[in-house]
Length: 372
Image (tube, rainbow, N blue to C red; front, side, top):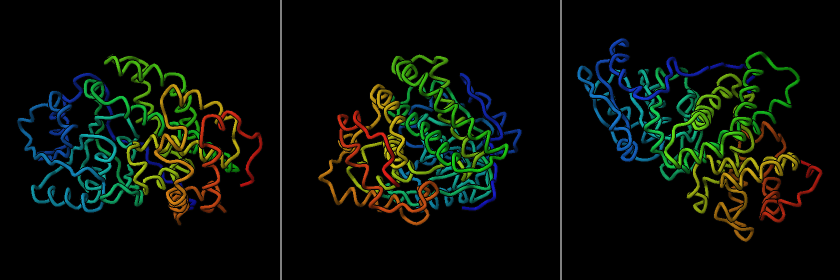
């Protein structure tokens, strides 16, 4: 691990309020932006179009993305931006699309404006992109030199987002505490920035355990409430601050490496990013021997409908080849699980599957660590 902590706090401008996009052209004009490439998916544009202003004095080129934040897709966006001479890129969509806009924009040294249509990850906040191949398997993550220029959250857009994405966002953001705290526990001393990141990680857990169920119910009712806004901003902002201020010391560890392994098997492709991470939290906690924390989480997972068993992710203990594949990918060279368990191997990662195979076994978890 690099010993240099590079702090990236977040976007230069952030706003969350009704009709926030009405001032978009004023902001673009002040930034001397005359031409923008608007990157969107079909569904993300359908939900955003009623709120997107008519940019009378800004030439607008619309670009429909292919569904993955992959190297070929990044090159396709860059080519379109260069061909049209865009001054800035506007990304409208979920985490993968926002990561795509950040990757292309940073590569071209263009300003980036993000309008999230989902509250499922901190992608709208962080200067980082997760790169997949065109089949959806994890490849790497890239940390960008420059943060996003503007992040604009329109409540009306997020009120039309599918509830399972908010649920996945809760799972992904809970990992900020369980991964970040596990890494922080290994530090002899903490700098001011790492302390801030650690506090943000704790805040993620406290807000989501307190307001998560209420926020999901409010979204289902189509009501913008304090609880819903708290959870959405925790998923996007507080979550982003953990990695922004803590860097490699608090960003990701075991849970995300388990997620990365899960992307390699088709049986888990029905799960969203945060749902895979949520299951990864449980695997990491077994590896740490923190069974009391698992018992604390199980009732919450049940209420929030987050995956708790192999069956929930589309597998059983009989899928030995697939489980071995997940384990092998989780401990590949460069995976962040090694920050937490320097001597981890695929056999050790595969061991918790049986412990977590059913609710019955999870209710009778051992009281001591598993020795690794």
